[in-house]
Length: 339
Ligand code: AHG
Ligand code: MN
Ligand code: MN
Ligand code: MN
Figure 1 (spheres, rainbow, N blue to C red):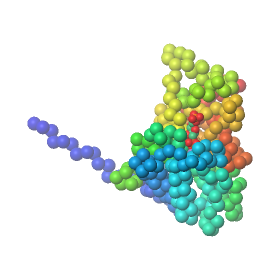
Figure 2 (figure 1 turned 180 degrees about the vertical axis):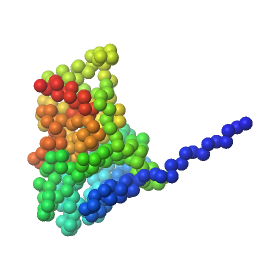
Figure 3 (figure 1 turned 90 degrees about the vertical axis):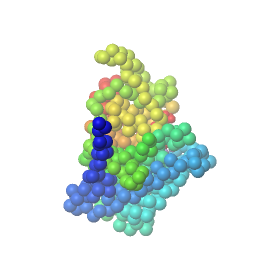
Figure 4 (figure 1 turned 30 degrees about the vertical axis):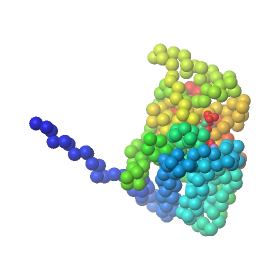
């Protein structure tokens, strides 16, 4: 006879990001709830950006905005719109004192947020050159706490990544994946359930594999690489102990390359080179937040001088750095080529 179809296993104990944040807050006796409210504003930004990205081709939101930003990038319409809505949600939260965005030349100060204690760095759309091709892009964020007694100045965000209170990113891929980590905490991944409109905990306590034969770098820059960088990547193309070379995966959106590296292991790199001696990726809203996620997931992140990425202090808000991040053992191997 026909088996009665098993009812889909319904998880009646779903953990949303909202519930996760409440449980985190309870762990900190002195918590005021301000950080939780800031995270609610952050998650609403991601939901909005996800919505507009999915509709971009339908409502003529692809293509260039006709402007460029202070880091020299041509701005896409979605860069500008995502930036505008991010600023609006940070402002209306009342919890953010100042904001640095890739798309804003100067720091934005929310002077009417009198008792706001947080400084936020943000890359509203990371990988925006991929947008019109429908390739995954993302939003990267970092949260610093203002120094005691500070009324909110640039110095509150020009700090080493070791002082970040929280950092993470949302990748707008097949589904919207939010990855967040708190200072000294674990890395947790959430998937946006469009039906519920909630981020659901799907990847608790993410840990990078200690090694994995995958490398992710733009080989188109190899002409400009320093010799030890060339030597390192060439070594991956030889037969390894198992007789096989590494495989190459490069999407061109840091968030997508980072998310894959976080899940599968391996290394992602954007080395400083003769063409970009200071590197391409920006410290405050790309390198430092990603470095915090990778370290809290058991990996490493270093700059082109093999210094710990989280200890680098940017002088200006759009300062760049070379970066190598990924499986712990793989970064040790990169270091061995930089003796
Ligand atoms: P953004 O779109 O925010 O300006 O960042 C683009 C960055 C990063 O996402 C990616 O890793 C890198 O640019 C790709 O650069 P190349 O195209 O030079 O490889
Ligand atoms: Mn850009
Ligand atoms: Mn970016
Ligand atoms: Mn960007």
